[in-house]
Length: 247
Ligand SMILES: [Zn+2]
Image (tube, rainbow, N blue to C red; front, side, top):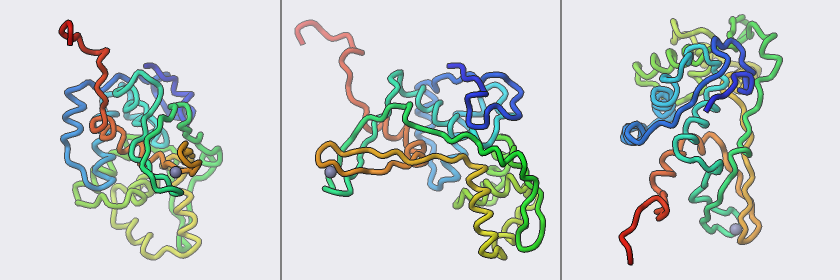
């Protein structure tokens, strides 16, 4: 599957390739992936980048803001040719019944990068100015994530996104100090910067046919658990097998 970089949420900003080629992961890699033990969100994202992104041509120049969409699409094409995602184990908040439902892939929306990100060159935190790079690449982010992993710190992803755009890879202690001394205004700025760097996605509303109750599904969880859901809930499809006659 070829995707023009202009159709990504960053609109192709900074890319050295005009399009990216996404191939299905293949069964062996899918198994390897599933057997890699990950506990924290950081470990899961590190695994996603290693298995699903670093083998794509030109990945180093991919915009960090597109990362979630690239991972999402690679997962989708690896598990299905049907442009629908089966959502399992939804719990209706109204009648508390468990149910499953299919979601067309087209309903998954990734927000384009806000234009203002081009105009922001620094942020003031606690009275001090810090230069920003809101056009950081997936490689910048991956390096930062790897560094935090080597220090055993992968609990909070926000810190890793912020460290990347604040160019604090060389000095990770500095961001801890900035966060520890953050004022109320700083926290607001940091939350906005986190959205500008990690990609913004709106939840999807799923209606439970049984009672009309609605569940809001967050994409972040959906993307993280997509493979797990498929491997655990795979239905036997007899059309794929050649059966003995008379069975
Ligand atoms: Zn219900």
